[in-house]
Length: 95
Image 1 (tube, one colour):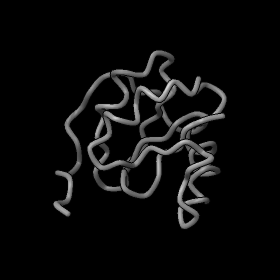
Image 2 (cartoon, one colour):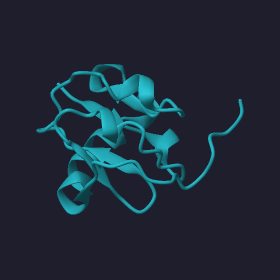
Image 3 (cartoon, helix red, strand yellow):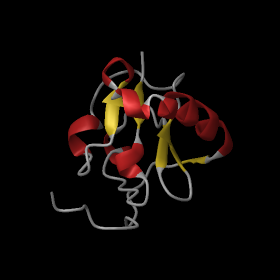
């Protein structure tokens, strides 16, 4: 099993999640982060760290974001691993 970064990360790209990941399975794209499905150990450490609630267990991923499972798999193969916190692209939206 794995976790998936979904739509809420797009354009924000918070990196609070990467610093708590024990296996360095996050990858940085231009507009968002991705989780490598073969590297994620399903520890859930990243989930409460995401201020925009963009990380879901693949079994709990909202149906409108199902395509993000494959997107994370594909993009994590193309992008560079990220292990340190960086400045986000945007502040979280007030709900």
